[in-house]
Length: 286
Length: 286
DNA sequence: TCAATGCCGTAATTTTCGTTACAGTCGCGC
DNA sequence: GCGCGACTGTAACGAAAATTACGGCATTGA
Image (tube, rainbow over all chains, first blue to last red; front, side, top):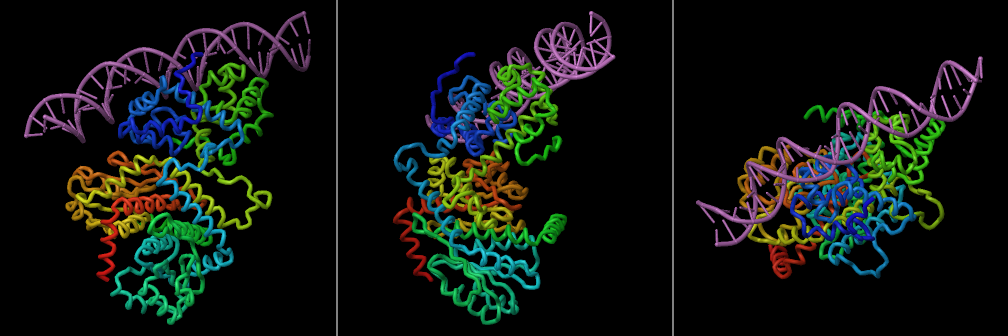
C-alpha cells in the first residue's frame, strides 16, 4: 500500500476544495460545487455519475481531482472514505467551524446566513400552533375563495403562495399590484372569503387601505407582517408576525417565506386526496 | 435505468443488515460485522478492500450483498450513497435542546423551521465567496442590462430580486412568464447582458430553452438552482446551488431567497452613493 | 468410516471504470 | 477580424473491478 501524495489537509477535503476554487476552470468549478453541495456522497460515485451530475464530462472531473493533488480518482475516493470514517468515529467532532474565535472568515456572506437562521428560529418560536392550525383550516375551506396580495417587495411572496395554493385547491387569486385594478377586485370579494395580505414596514398605504375595505366587506384577513406589526392587524383575524432583521438596509423576507412554505405543506397535507387528484389533473392538462 | 429491488427499508441499510444476520453464514457474518462497525465507509470501498478487511474472500462479500437482496455490489454501493446523502441533508442542527429528549412539542411546524435552517446553513457553507463576489460585480456593471426569469414557482423570486435591483440600478427587467412574450424579450438581450435565471426541479423546458437561446445570443447567465443542478448549468457562467429539502412534497425556496437577499444587500453596498441617490430620487417621484 | 451437503476460496471471465490521446471550440488579445 | 492559447468533450485504450465457474474442504448424518 503506497502512501499517496501527502495532502496533509487534516482538516477536511472540502476545505481543500474550497481553497483551490481559484485555480480551477469554469467547468471544473462546477464539479467542485456539486461535490461541496452533496458532500461527500457525490465524490464516492463513479466518475461517470459524478460527471453527469455536474453536467460536465468525465475527463473534466479527472482533471479536477488531479489539480487538487490526488494521484487519481481512486486515490481521491479512498481519502474521502478515510475522512468519512474518521469523522463518524468521533461523535460530532465539528460540523462547521473549528475552534477558532468568532472570526468570520467570510465577512460578508456569513452574517447573512446567521441573520436568516435567527429570523427563522425567532419567528417559529413565537408562532402559536393554534394560530397556525386555524389558518390552515381556513385555507382548506373550499367554500371560501382565497385572495392574495402583497406590497412592493412582498408581492412576490403573495405570488409564490398563490402559485402553490392554486395547485391544491380552486378559487385562488393573486391580486396584482396595479392600483387601478384593485377597485374591481374588491367587488370579487364575497363575505367570508379569505384575504391573505403581506405587509411589512414601511407599511404601504394602498395595501392597508385595500385590507380595510376588504374587511368592511366581510372578508377574513390573514396578515403576514413584521415584528413591529402592520396597522392592518386591527382588521385581521389572524396575524403572523415574522422577524425581518438583516445586516443590510433592506429587511429580510426569509422567515416569511419559511412560514408560507410551512402553510403550503400543511394545507396540501390536510387536503390529502383532494389535492393529490387536483395536481394530477392539472398535470394532465399540460 | 431500472429502479432496483425495492428494498424500501427507508430507515437504514444498517438495520436491514442487522435484521438479516440470522440468515447469513459464518463468513458472511464477518463481512456484516465489519460493515456495521465501520458504517458506511467500509461498504463504499471496492469489494477486494472490503473483503480483505473482513478477512474473507471477495465472493463471500458478493454473496453477502446478494443475500441482502441487492442486484450486485454497485447497486449496494449506490444505495449506501443515497442513504448517506439523505442523512447529511438533514443534519438536525442541534442535538437535543434544553428540556431533555427530542420531544417535538409542535410536531408540524418545528420540522419546517429545522429544515429551513439546515437549508440556509448548508447552502451558505458551500457558497464560494469568490463566486458570490463575481456575481455581485456582474450585477453592479451598469453597462449591462439585467434580465430576470424564473419558473413556475421561482418566478416569484425573480420578481423579488427585480423589485430590489430596480431600485438601486437602471436597466433591470423581469421577464414575465407568459411564453408568448419570450421571443420578443430575447431580442432585447444584448451581448454581455446578464440573465439571472431561477430553475429548480423539475426543470422547466421553456425556462431552459430561453436560457439556451440567451446564451447563444451572448448573454452571461447566472443560474440559481437546487443541489441536483439544472441542465442550464452548462450554459451558465455562474451557478449557485442551493439546498431545497423540505418535509413536504414541495421543495423549499428559503435558501434561494436568503442568497438573493445577500446579493441584493451586497450590490446595494457596492453601488454605494449611486444607489443611495437613485433610491432618493425614486422616492421623490412618488 | 463413508458419503453427501453446503460453505468457501482460487482462478478465469466479462464488464465497467478510469485514463489518456486528440481534435474541436471558445474566448482573448493583438 | 484574425490567429493564438487554453479549455473541454469524444473516443479509444488499458487496467481494475465485479461476477461466475469450479473444485477443495469441512461438517453432518448414517
